[in-house]
Image (cartoon, rainbow, N blue to C red; front, side):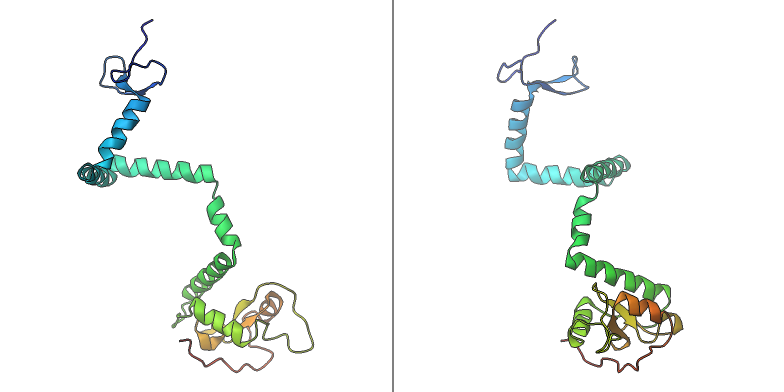
Length: 193
């Protein structure tokens, strides 16, 4: 059996990249020499720009789109969604998910105004000292994250705005459901600057 040797360095042990167009099915340069030549070629700004133009054009073709989908899917499967899971476990991730869910529910229930931001929600919680509005002075709420409770429920035509939301623990929000609050609520009428 004939051993293939690199045309540049003469090595036979570095392995060769495949190439369908050649007679033996491999490139003439070993992997190390080929990678070195590729790095040199890409280091020239003009060549790098040309390469990016070709990549951009390729990514718009059906084969390029399918190729990028496959590689993205492969990367996702390798990571097993761990990056997204780690983000979701942070306070910022939890807040983002709660806001996303509340905006979704507001749209689902056709709220006429849906303009509550993360900063406004933080201001509401700060105004109520990060405590459940319905707990009062006598009862203690179970520990956990505060939820957005709509004073006038979205299902009854309420809006997803700062003046229609108070912080509530899970227990009290679930008890209230889509009814009116047991304790009269003075809506928060402040502006976050």
